[in-house]
Length: 403
Image (cartoon, rainbow, N blue to C red):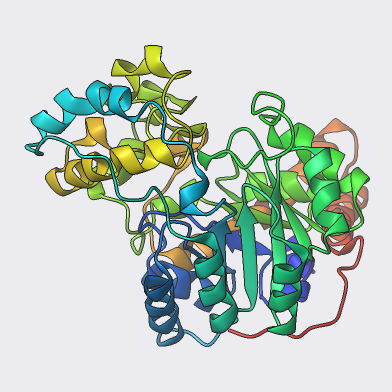
């Protein structure tokens, strides 16, 4: 029996009705196309639709497109936000002045304040409850208890994002089926909602075991995981699953602009860092001209989602023009390890690399002193240990899964 045999169908895979305890991260902004979500699902992972910026009718349309491509379980993710009219609009004039030259460079007209700064979270959630996917995940906070209850009545499993122990405990108390531990290495927006963002930027290696020890629900590791070595490390830390975003960003089915995908290969030269200048909330991305030009304004741009709305037209125009220096190139610290391939090939490779990584650990132990039959036993023992790590803390049983 190989380590891969022990990985398949274990941990959150059993909980969510998957072949592999692997989640394709829900990246908003058109990255998680129906093709990417469905391909991930068909490969046995959990494909996820990033619906945070989608209007309710668009959510319904994307769900229909996904279900036309797969009958397997998939997830929808939302950002937990106040309603659009609850956000203070102070500082918009100054914020628009800061980006005026960038807009002019892209041929955009003089900017007017946006009519509203985000979609209605309540209306988005209504659409999700109506769609009743197998899994719903949340970023930026915890919805009201009655809304979580409505999701459960619809048969949905609930994943809650956490960047620290306090958030994980809050999600466990709210009845989450599993908790996504977002390490500081992760690309995209930070999900912190208890405490400060700096305190919530804990690395995955430190965060996962702390959450595993703090709560009695399965933990899914996210942040910096790019290949099977990262998967093995996550399970060694006690995780019951892994979530990968940047690794799937490079996939053929991803909606990322080709220049964005190409820039991942330059990540060692460009570097990544957290920035507020695109959206008003700390988010990790590849460093580019826009981030550098507005670096001095990091602390003074309006909060999310106001700044996000103010830069939306600029970012869309930059994407259309292929102007990489004005795109929000969200990516994690492991971006340079991204590999272009179909999503199904990535899932298969992750499983194979997990097996090799566990075998490599056994080989290292052999070099250190074990030999012959003892070395063979060590390899078997490493595989058994991997299986024990995956299956430890059996996930709660109950509602079935659906597409």
